[in-house]
Image (cartoon, rainbow, N blue to C red; front, top):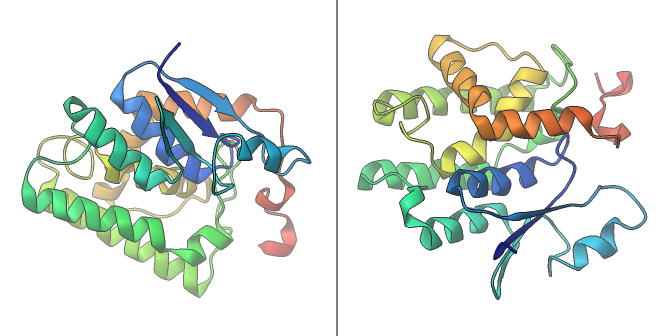
Length: 222
């Protein structure tokens, strides 16, 4: 049995789960996945079996438990250095850590009004002054990272990194809500959508049977 187990929520909706899962998928080592449907009577008890915080994702690696997406990525970067989850260049690595932390703690309006919903399309929905401000910050951040550090590949820092895992749910959000992007930003979004891990996640999201009404964007929230 693999020494790594990751507990995650619904792939259609759980943006935090995607971040930790995508970093683990990139490592390329065998792992066991435990999917816990969110918003059900048994959800809380099932999560408690894997996460002391009551939140997911949660990673179990031998006798180590990590229950935060960014902490999971940091742990994987240390445990599997060959995966090169952080840029090797010190300046790029510092920037990657900063933009990852910014995603981890910021963009509240974008999260609130444009929830991740991989299989649906809500063009133009969720636009508020706050979400538009968040969108512009993400657009500027993507352009800046690509211009300064993206010469070695199609991702924010050239090679795939923790930063890309942290912004992966935003990639799906921008597709779902049809956010306008310039050529550089669009190329990055397309590269992320073509990533095998992202395609694997999206295929699973398409076939999930569960539905969370609050994330299906009823007209009252438009």
